Length: 466
Ligand SMILES: Cc1cc2nc3c(=O)[nH]c(=O)nc-3n(C[C@H](O)[C@H](O)[C@H](O)COP(=O)(O)OP(=O)(O)OC[C@H]3O[C@@H](n4cnc5c(N)ncnc54)[C@H](O)[C@@H]3O)c2cc1C
Image (cartoon, rainbow, N blue to C red; front, side):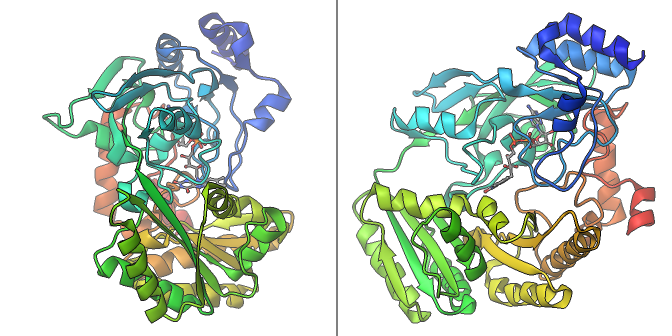
């Protein structure tokens, strides 16, 4: 079937108004928040599971790739149509279908914006905990695709710890359910396999999420340091004392400078680093934990610890942190995020090595990250229009991920592999490991319809670029 024929069939399935194929539309859907670019044949906005199933069945029959897309904020090329194909954009499937308080569960469509669900639940005193910094725009389908993390995932766990089940459309259009509201299901943990599979194994059309009671009290502190090393050592010391705060986020001077130009969160421009430490839980005992944390910070030469006095001050501190990625573009037009994770005791040493990579390549690197999880986000700043500088940034990013892998860490804490980190999979997996993954992919997607070319490097490709 030619492209025109394909578009006509798609119009029959979802209605002409829900198929996009103009030059402008295909260009707009040709990228996401990574540096990768591609061009789909068409973009489809399905309205329900039946339409998704029919589109996938058509794609299977015709051998055309299918790329699921939420808001396209992933940072690894996961929604780029590298081999053409149909982008399934879930913006119309954005309903919260059920809020089941007695069973502590909600059922949502994949296009629900993460923060919208959280705002709705908070009004009822409940929380959906995973909070990617992009929560204002990211979707729950995308969060599932990437197994997203966020500041509060230190205490509460990442997306996979909150997904109970899902309705899935399989490679040939069949519809099935995995998991359910029961906390434990017999047999293989298929839900665990799907979360984080970046749309390469199945497409989620309904998702059952776990919800918890919102905490009774919250305390948010800003700890200010004159040395990155002291800030890093504080992080492991707090956890070593047996305290797991809700968040332990770190930002360095480069990032604070950018944030202050953009959001004015009140961060100190003369400090080397700050930690945002948030405690939550029952009111009783929170003061005691805060006092203990203050003592640990002092032991590690903190300059000052400021306590957010009210909700407005707390929101301001978080607005700075959550707006940090966008803010750095005030310093240089583009950034590349290295999402490496290291054992948290290695943070000071690895951060030092990251700085050295920046010096070696003459690139400005800012750091803003989930320190409690050891999940670094060095932001390499550059100008994409300068081909040479772009190449250097990509090389530096790969070198930083190698440093993380060599420190006993890994190449992605939460942003996924997509297209961008295929080569780096070799840093942490053997060829046997990768072949096991390819076997799973072949079993669940024999014709390579679902987001082909992502996550698992092809053997030849690794040899050609590695
Ligand atoms: C400024 C900024 C800050 C960020 N902060 C964080 C952070 O703190 N933590 C974090 O983890 N990430 C963060 N991210 C990355 C990104 O926002 C997350 O990965 C998010 O989950 C992506 O959601 P999305 O709706 O944009 O998904 P998309 O980018 O559209 O898709 C992501 C992946 O999921 C797949 N997918 C989408 N929908 C489905 C579906 N229904 N079924 C199966 N697969 C599907 C896609 O094919 C793709 O592979 C940040 C990004 C930006 C730009």
